[in-house]
Image (cartoon, rainbow, N blue to C red; front, top):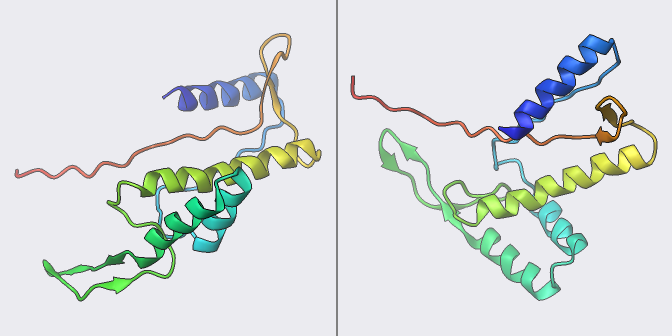
Length: 143
């Protein structure tokens, strides 16, 4: 909730001061678009030991899944990309991928391609990106 409040305050402040502000939203709610090679390279760049990267990637690559069609599961198959929903390990791997996005955005600010937004009366606090996590919950009712 803090990230949402911070984002709202920045937008309100920019409107009041009539400052320019560029916002863009990236939908990070699905794991199915994660490329395995990107995940592997990201783990190596972050500093994961090579052997650990190999073990993690082997677990990701050999996992199988199936789809429910009219309530019946299909034959299992191996996914070629994407993290497996329902796997307890997937949220942690997804955070590694999102951290890669954070590093890229910060490098844009460092290179002068974007500027951070100054917050506060004396501009003592700068924001370049905020990651807002919204969890979608499916409500099932028997009414």
